[in-house]
Length: 326
Image (cartoon, rainbow, N blue to C red; front, side, top):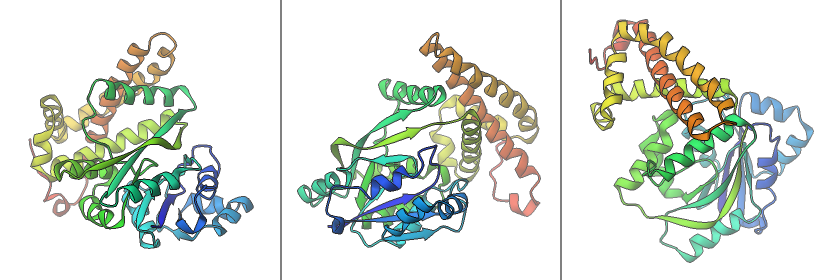
């Protein structure tokens, strides 16, 4: 059973080409796995100007040139789909530009499917390695949610934790092709609702390097707010599953005049809280996490408001399908 390692070389976070080097340095027989590298935009330019990167790409089984810049594309499924279209393996393993695969990664995945021939999907562990205070804060926040039982889904990740049979990805492709940033969440919900059994590999598959900047975080959370706006106005079912307070805030922000007023207030306060959270880590982790959570939520609201304001500038016909809750 051949494993296809699907590796979009974006968002490398100062790791150089270690993700590609680690993918090519597996201790499994080379004939048992293939490396499909995806480049595009800045990642392609950097690779072509680096002799070491070009040499590594020449050793890959396929190099896919994506039609968008990988560092700004929001739909995570797009590069993955392009990689899958170019691969020949029966099992797909998805990595990222800032994941460093452990040498036994492919061997552990192959061993799971060999021992469990009916298994369709498997999750492995990974080491999260923060390289600055903000990344450490983000990781502490994720750990805190898991500890409190707020992460109820068996999260399916396209970033170094999940391998699946090729035919299963075809189903996921249809489920989440328009989900943008929320593709992995939609896949996880689909897995839970359809009671698809998720296998487990007890040993870590990779290191996940995190070297985030505040500018990246603010931009990412603004995009999250915009994605909430798209989902909120496209599906009443989505609005119904939101918590009461979140549904009330989004309903308010969905009114044009409210969005105009709320955007500068929520954005300024959110940025201030996120900036304050980093130095607070030295004094009190719980207080730093509290500031982080409040700042995060306010920036999400700002992103929602910004999307609403931009929608007001669209031609009337383009807005006809938006569900007005005002």
